[in-house]
Length: 52
Image 1: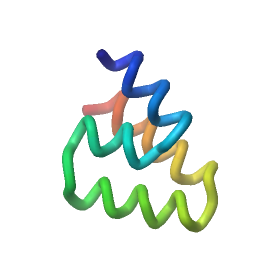
Image 2: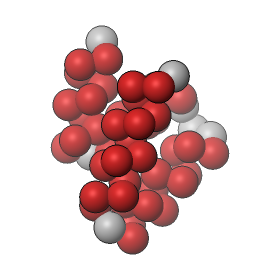
Image 3: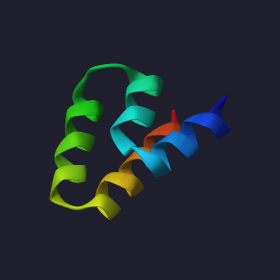
Image 4: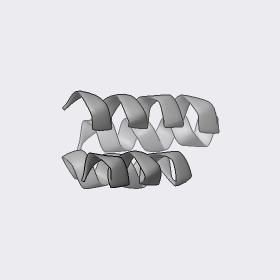
């Protein structure tokens, strides 16, 4: 299941975070990072999906 989350995190970073932790601090932070730039949102999403 983590492979699918990582793939979704590469395509749409907030979606991967949402599937892992739900709506919370990490989700909103990821949306903000993705809006500021795709790469920061991508890095954060992959980190959240792989660490928790």
